[in-house]
Image (cartoon, rainbow, N blue to C red; front, side, top):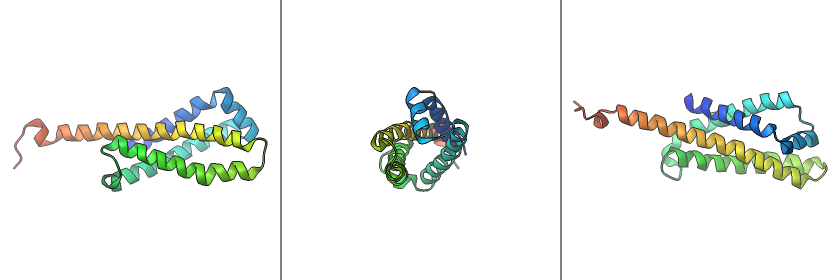
Amino acid sequence: MALTLSGAATFWAANLLISLTPAAAAYRSAQSIDYVPMLVEAAAGGLVLAGLFSLIMLRWGARLPGSGRLCHALFLAICALVLVTAFVEVPAKLGAGGDDPGRWLLVATVINTIRIVALGLTIGLVGRVRDDAADSDSPRATGEDTP
């Protein structure tokens, strides 16, 4: 639960900070995106992505490439970014036929990169801290004998 909530909170906070930039304001205007619903959708999207990241890392973390939680989370972030770009952003931007779809696809990809990588970094770091705390509580780390 800690991995999911921390990742979702970071995703939403990154979205909030990005939304304050002039580039994001131009993007919202060009795509006809309302501000408050966008923040609610970012919270929901962050929870879904963070939940998926957490589930995959806890169930199949040992099978992911790289060593350690941070590498696993960054790998998942890259995979999620590729999937979101290929299956959500490209069809939405190129299929809409609006003004300069290539530019808005690039802006959306940059925004998603920041949000998804921030989510992955947070989940990886929280997972690492939790692993380190669990290791320090183990009898072997404290020098206690095990029966």
